[in-house]
Length: 183
Image (cartoon, helix red, strand yellow):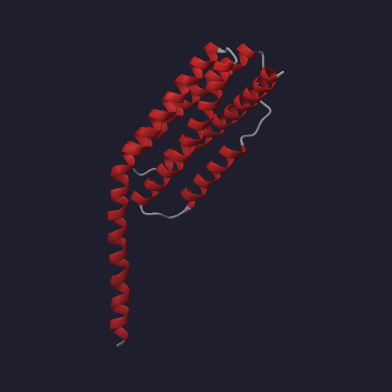
């Protein structure tokens, strides 16, 4: 009885991940287009191809379970992508936009790392060794992507700070002149 409950949860969460990955396939091109750093843009494009592979792995797992992957909306990914879309609509300076995109991308990765870690563990408990291996591979790729984003953020965040400092000085100068003109 308890194994059936875990299996139902497992299949439900796999459906959630399937929806999440498909939503990400649609969101990543927007993120790549908004990136000003060639390295970040390239990273989003590479992750798009990887994400398509994640969808294929999930389909393979559903086939082995005799289940359909559809029927679930991933509210978590919907919210994370919505926040990312809102960031893209902001008018940040180039470096700050890239820093914002990395922040949004890392939220996605952390969500996926948590989800894939759970379903991989449940696959192990349910004796789904082939599914577990596929889920482990995806989990490792998500962790690698997060690490790449962290490394990229080191340079991008510094650039965003430097650009922000220059803009602050530029903004102060006209105000100072305006105050001086009034005097």
